[in-house]
Image (cartoon, rainbow over all chains, first blue to last red):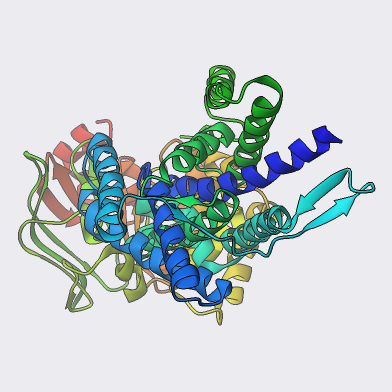
Length: 293
Length: 235
């Protein structure tokens, strides 16, 4: 029963990683860059929701929507001012800019909101479901997190595969030049990708802070790195890969904490990543398509 | 009036001067061939017309409008489509999705008719409409690339090396299609290394050498021109 309980915790944590990993993987798929500031957008989302709910006493849903709106705008602005001027620049320059943007967001948060930790009160009411005469309890937040992750995945897969803008996104991710010849505005498509990724980061931020209630300017860093790992683990650029990578990472992390060592859990997680990449360098679901000439 | 008028364009890749003061025109209803060896700058010219590259000087006019500063994604909407070199179909998308993207700037209306027309012309594409474009053969991909460009109902179609890497029988088929499109009213600008084929269906031709146009004449005169024969037609 304990095993089942750990597994559910793992899936829940993994769901958060998956939601964050989606942002990494979508931006990578289209802009071919690693947006290392993505983790810090999570933190901004957490703060916005914190101030809206705990400070101004607004309804949690209003707080979540506000966090999504602010993060969406932030994501678009980050792309517009930091990355867009570097579209033709070497990948290394963009990577360094992304790291710089990450520190910029952390330090701005420190200036604006102080470096001390705030206690985030969960947006989901306390309480839990009980199974097997109380041997297994699953709290509401866990259920909500998993459901939100499923809804996001289904929605995103539908958007990417069925809508005109979604198809334009896939076209841009494969060949920007050919996409332009079709009449697709590549810059707008990249902005849209940053917008979606950042809105998801806001949701992830709120869920994360609800589960681990200490919020400070570096809150986004570790989950950001873990989600990036999850994206690579699943095959960066692949949306199903982000889900699989995120869930596996969450499960491995919880199991490592439960059965092996709390201190070494992160090391174990990254060791698994290294092993997977040694065996399959493109990640679990990543694939290499041979082009016909 | 010329449908497409290119005047004195100069295109650079960094410090390399790839296109040196090129100018030419295409009249409505014509098939024009731009021939030249590998690296002469043929693809660069087409990419400049489509807005993927920019010229430092001069102008590109399409139907009287200067398009040299129009963003690339707005050009297809004006009625100027390109089938790029190497086909560049979206390999990880289905055949049907590729065609749908060809009509990205068009409304839903009329899309069905064009689609039916393309599927009638290329039954193979219809059979494989749900398959990923990456699973098609080279010839089928070329058909798809052309069908995709036709989906935007272009007034003028630019084709970049449509015969590249294809079996002779497929090359015939592609050129038949180009003629058919032209007879249907589409103006054609054809870039080819296969000069013999290209000139055989063209009205006029331009010969490009290391970034400059060295000869221009009626296609049949170029076919009989000694220096052109030596350089591009195998004697």
